[in-house]
Amino acid sequence: MHTTVNALETRPGSELLQRLAKLIGTTQVLVVRTLDRLAVLNASQYPAVPGSHACFKGLSGAVATASRAAYELAEATANNPLDATPADGPPADEAARRRAQHSEAGPLLAERLSTAAHHLDLSATLCHYAAFGIARDLKNHPEHLSLPQVSAAQYKMLEKIAPGGTRRYTPIRGSETIIAGDGTRLHPTPFNALRKHRLIRPSHVSALGDRNIEITAAGQLVLDLQTPARDLTAPLGKTPIPRVGSRRLR
Image (tube, rainbow, N blue to C red):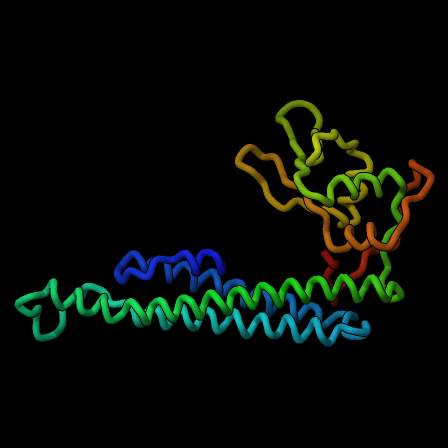
């Protein structure tokens, strides 16, 4: 969002209005989503974890700065002159009037967009710090966690999936195929065990029906906190992964 707003041309007119409308809508959706995550964390056991206060402040700050970005984009909409006709009718030199309006609006639009981009950048930074802090706090205080114990095969598969690029193909005929980002073909048994316990999840479904697979927050914590078991055939433990309030941590 920061990059998109920074690259936006400040040329006044209808095209800018359309782009601002989409950016405002997207920013407001992100604000609501961040508020939802904040409420879920607040209702969980995470507030009892030492260090959680800073992460709550960070996410609250992200909500505030993203809201300011939406406000600046809305102000840019108000500063954007459209080619409407005044009540007393168009002047003799309508083109000159429009040029004057656009010239006057240009610096205001540039300032609004620059400020919005700054707030979006700050909001993203605060989200990254909060996400890093949550993982760090849980890693430093594992007594607040209840992660499943994975087998060596499952641990190795998590290592394969963690860098990204894993895809699961489900053909019309035949069995599904799972390919890691490095081109390795993954066995479905440990894959399905990891999926069952929410250590991995699909992140995108293409038009062809194949899915991108990514590691969840709980899966990353398993990699960080556990050492692979020696028994390659050991089943995944039945202990549930950590919950955030009434939801599973993902």
